[in-house]
Length: 333
Image 1 (cartoon, one colour):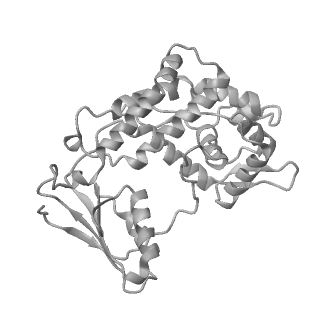
Image 2 (image 1 turned 60 degrees about the vertical axis):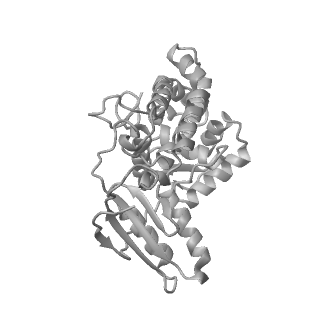
Image 3 (image 1 turned 90 degrees about the vertical axis):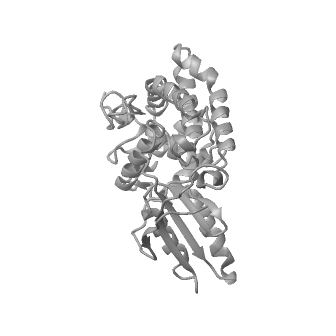
């Protein structure tokens, strides 16, 4: 493989880290992850006072015990996602302003992913690093972090991802390696003379496995999609089913490298998977919101004033998610 001109070499730069840590998605939806999903989907104001008893009732819809619900609340406080308000009993929580901003960004990311093909300039971000044998733990940490940032290993210590955005990886490498003696790393913008084929960068991706994951999603939710489109889902089922669909869909923006179309096999199932998700998410939004209000109101009389829902726009010119019927803000019904 021959490479084009390497540009904009950036080494050891540092940027401030995000203060709010959103729990990573987990298979099986831990109570902590499930609560994060619910708060991100259905609350959009740091002014809302959320009693712990209401949270317990919400999570009960998903079979989560009271003890597990309280443990999830405690963990989200430690992560800076929520905070307590006052010293009353039962405890009252609220979303932090940092968490609101993070949630909006992530919801936009999840709902807009795949709406349009990426604007392709032919550029890739390439990371190369050299870590001494004594830094084995750091090497493993770097590989895990690069994978989380949607980089893929081209060679042992050379990783790539499409596009130009290098800020997050610059911050990550500086954080992980600045104290590792004799560690060296570089971040480059590159072009490849040969993008496709067995020696091009696309060969580093397991697109067969990704296509299989999209196909499995389509098959898993085909029946629910049909029922949602036909108005055959009641509110109780809508809340659980819509949350499940989001939980399953949200992994794809993190594992799909979003390669340009000319590097993808045909047919490529992402659009069908996205349509499946959006049909479910859009059709069940109001029902899921109504069910959440219903279960929370006995413990939280103001629930209807604050519980909302995000919904993706089908218009690629206006891809901003909207909450309920009045944009991404609490519905004051």
